[in-house]
Image 1: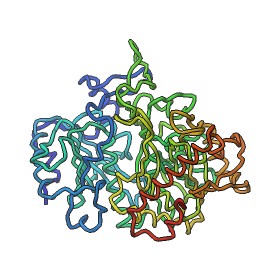
Image 2: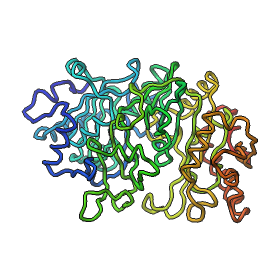
Image 3: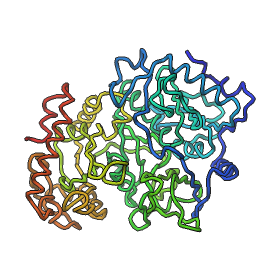
Image 4: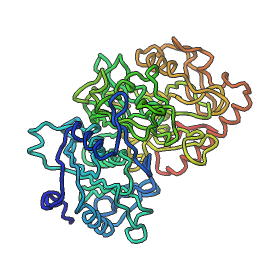
Length: 524
């Protein structure tokens, strides 16, 4: 066992800042010239070499706890206990003369399932991110704090891949036996939150039979929750920030027998192309206390140019959840009655909304389809199909089938309606068609929540057998059938056929899945 107790932080001569306030962390960032304040008072920083997660450099220590439980492969890559111990000692040595910033927080708004986390950071703005994103403690809790998990994030430490067993100099390694996450070589703050997300995605199902979800959640006046699954850029944060409903959280939740709860105490929203008109709740939350990552200022000003992607398409902002006007605290809600799978279909094939059967829901949940478009990543010039199981495969240590079966059980028990929503393209694929208008997506979701789609006439999409409504208030009926929006119908049919084959090809790797789930996929 490693020596990762209090001695690591207390029996040392180095400078340690314990649980500083946001104001103190902002001032230290400014005084060290690591960031600047924007016109609205938010703190803007650059994360350096990495402006997004590095999924190829995420590892899980393979030991007695994880060996026969984790779904090993390209997503969950094994790391030896021996190499972890050696790397940990190197990190400790690196930190001997460093000033550190420590935050004690909670992950999980439900006290029955939440965990206490101590996060040790090299930079003050990393600690501000932790303060924004996790659940803050009061002074009484801080005095009695004994962490369940620890995270050590040291961007300045670079691993030696040949010696340390990593792929390259950066790494994020989870050790379930030691309850420790080591992050090095990258300053991208999302690695911290996704590390803890991965921990809960393993522990909640195996220990408590609770379903963890990569989703946003809001709640209506009747106490019923709505869940929005989706990969980055599909609209989870945008669509859950609804002034008519209370926000529970924008990214990571769990579904218990009694309801849902948020893992976090803040939001981590994409900032690219942000406007007050289209996303007013997020736009107005970017004020003093918020942390902007990798943005660009308009020349000669402190005004953010949200359309400038010269540093990255993945510009981000983190802020405490109470920066949103209508929010529920503590972040817990009732049992869901509606679940929306959000996909950015850059091929323009899927309808704006479809109603799914149980088998279809489980099939599409395991598939986790979306598409990347040109410009989002180096080398992508045409739409690129992405299948990310459970709409969050990089953070799911267990088999996707395990999570899907848990979802199916909850659907049956709660009479839950599941919808597939295309927030991507209409009238052609990327480069030909146009992006689905946000106001149409909002109108369709609103109608579904208000049961306005229950008595509508439905038609069936060929091959995928998706049922879509032929009319909806506030939405032009001609866009509800995606084939009708294409100028060349034969081109649509050809792309439809190609996409359906890609779904089948991807699903072939799930040999142990129940045959009833396979029936929810395309019929070629």
